[in-house]
Length: 436
Image (cartoon, rainbow, N blue to C red):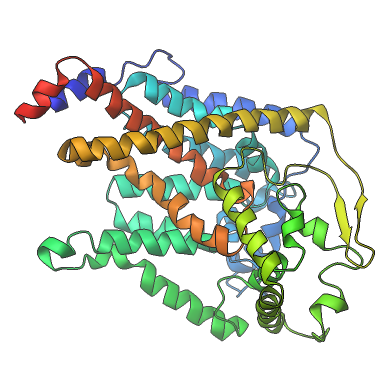
């Protein structure tokens, strides 16, 4: 029977390191420490320490520029300041454990090995887990959320999804989308909604209500206005994929100067500034339709096809719209960064090629043996964060740091599709399939 074939091919991993969960995590941590001590950037988890302290002592955070998700995650490590580096190691280890558990669902041993190897080979993700203020939290919470989906643990899914969405507000779209899929899964046959999986909707209502009450804006994070203003500015299309958008557009005569912002009062509150910048972004997009379309094209290409890290270049490059010149600052062209970017380019090139081929295999298998594919493809949930993430990526903007986690979780899915293809191709399989 098909299940017997699957079980015979399962769990013959050729490396002890990739068979033992704790050895696997140890390898990740050793590599991570090497990245930490060779990086020219400091860890940034300390950015959350003030807000984490306020929450710990029962106070409402003084601002909602970013959601409180990362601050809540830092609370257990407030004793470890000022770097909070143990938090980086702890949450990276947990994320690696849940990624390991997810990959153990892959049926073919070589495909499982490849999927597990993808994490240590993704040097840029580990770099961000060291230097970014929220990537390590995102990695842990995203792997936990998807593992809870695999195990059908709706409560854990709701908690991890809420924290993830409040750490990076773009995840509200995948959180709501996945909740809708799971809540409506049996509706066609049973005409019932599984309300346990729909908790994302009341949680969103509660969050927007609290934000309106405490911060005078329903926005999940009050940096939204600034982000929209950056991504719908007339010159956005010149920034990506080459340059860091924030630095490139924020110079002396940049898009936050009076020529672009207009008459926004200097005394405006965060909520007022957020609303004002959103309205400014809408006007800017409507006034410059050609540049807006070019920007959307760039966002689409950046999210799906561009194999280099975005932005391509490290360092400081600043546009001066008044003189239409680009000032080149510190280029940071060290061998560590160049070779790291090169490694990521090879990594993503392989991901894009195998992913597109895997999509073709998926469509072909679905057409030829739909029942087997549906039973075998429980890992298809790994595509949900990336698929739903297309919406904020194209509507707002895309950088590698915002998609690197969801892309990693595509690797076990791609490996599982290739596993099914290998099983289908084995002699004698077709006869067993037809007899079922």
